Length: 344
Ligand SMILES: [Zn+2]
Image (cartoon, rainbow, N blue to C red; front, top):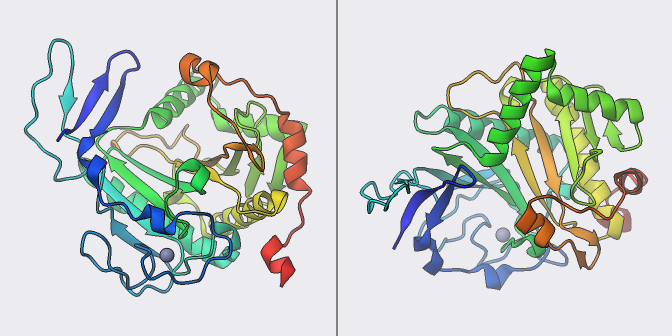
């Protein structure tokens, strides 16, 4: 069994090696699939209220949102502290952190797209609470919140949920974003993300939704066909400092984007959603780190997956064969009601 972090000297980043998870009991096969034609409650779903998980722990009979520590975490406060010393220049260290699962709803067959804006506001409050609680812990330097939606991105259970990885290291993408944003601030005196927003609003063709304080757009530089950002218009390093009005406006933006996605092909639209919040390593990010949510959907068409090829995986740069302007127009043109609700 190996459970540790190993330093990648060529990429200058940590690799979490969690070989102990290889043999974890897996119930995903019983509940896999997308949230179409599923019941509200599934007796052997490990996320439904009141159910027993494989660890022997029982879920609360929750009504709204439910958070629990992942039973098979890739980072843990109980990760082995005594590690085999690595040879030569190599470095390793304990994989310390906290992994949690956050269920959006007790209903197995709902998705984020079907939650009401008021329920999405509660979700933002829960995300903020987790960020603050975990980020305040001494050893936690970053709190990464993300959702894998759809079997095509490897989600084993359609029950609406996201995951939280609070770690002793800063995630590479967050680190990179913080680094370039700080440099931009020093060189120009401006917030990089504000300059991006200004360019998007000047052009306007890629904006999918906008209200008083929040905006959703496919960026000029999108790497995936339907890659999309949602952000508050004012700079906040994390959810922690957003006002109620800003949370309400962000909820409306998220609600609208989710409906556009699902209505596009009248199917539950798969994606990876990441919340980009400032690291919790004690440094001050408030002047340059602009919180945003990033959707990275893997599909180009209903049955056409964007495979990461040699250029992307090997070379590291994306070749995109779609037009962000056209894709934004497709999304923007979707009806306002979710297709499932329009049916009934
Ligand atoms: Zn369930």
